[in-house]
Length: 266
Length: 297
Image (cartoon, rainbow over all chains, first blue to last red; front, top):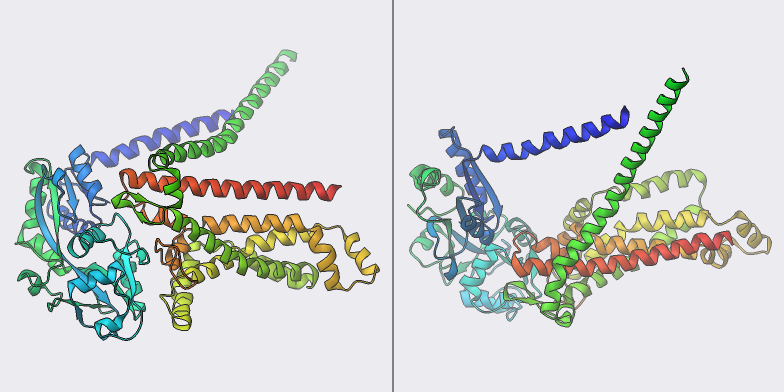
């Protein structure tokens, strides 16, 4: 009897597990996937949206900008999230700018250097400018901190600052905004780049070309490092997707991200 | 009565066969998992190696996957540096500890120290990494300069992480030496240290070598702690204080967003790691089995 019981319970386990996976998917009406930079804000939107619309299920997934755009095209999700501009071969999708995010160049608060030209930042990350002295700081070599290949934040930095120039190989590489900030907060000679919304008192954001990293300077165009947060969909969004996007763009939805340090679009 | 007895017996035999079959399936599932992993990694990882040329893949010094430049040389060198560093720190320390535990300490001291050393193995690697970030990295930065996230930091933390492996296997192989070896040596007038140096260490040699190789495997395979403290720059480090990226960090760091050829290149990184670890394990198994054979003879 006993071996049969084992076989039976194994079978029961298989049967019990398979509909569990299906069930979770069945309850979701709307799926968003893509940029991990947008994900925390999309989670917030989804949470508040579902409070006011209890009959909706909104599921937010990460995966990165490129994966999100792919998923949107293949129909795996209704809305893709991208924290970089669409490439030419992706332009067939409809894009909606839902927020904008500044990119801050951060240093240790004790660093006497207050600002730099974008060109100088480019030289630092290219590995050509290696000492703080050349920027009016102490005679110490610069610890350059960057993000890993494939990251949307690195992609935006590459596009906005570096252009075709490569970030040099000796740069310390971290896989999240948080760890970049952590390193810069503890190393008096480090420099890195993170999302403007994540700058806190542990680090100092440099002025670029004379403009401080503030909302006003981003709005009047004098602070240049800004990237869009995009929602993309196949064709004009309709049904659930449209309701959700309308909420995101409403004053209530925009207020949520303003509190989190992002720039509103309305 | 007789027929009923035979029926019950038949049923028992059938159950026996069923159990044996079930156990066989379980045993083979472990083997097949290894097989699936091997096939999967090789199938995913090798095409890109041949597409861009094995030589440029292994010896190329630049890693820019978004521009389709895949050179793993800095990571291969990085893994070797960090592992060697861990060996330089961990092996003498671990061996010394093993000798003290088996030859120069009372049973009571051994009863305290050995379990504590084995507890070291149970600490999750993320905790080692965290300790490294909070204590070791600032210390290195303030004492020696540089960013602190470096070959040195990774070597020290890995050196500590491999201690339990080296100590416990070395202790086992030292304890396995027949008492007659020690007695004979002492009877010939050798001191305790001479006995250790000239009789016991040579006798336990293959066990000690196996412990070193297993420690090496652990150091090469470690990922989490290394990502946190090594700095992960994809360049061949110019000094002990420069940041370094290992093969394992390369995979874990970029897995999140990798797609297409970038993803395949990470699988190729896995293939190389796989080959290195297979070689190390085989060497360890061979030396360990030679150790057993030697003792019997």
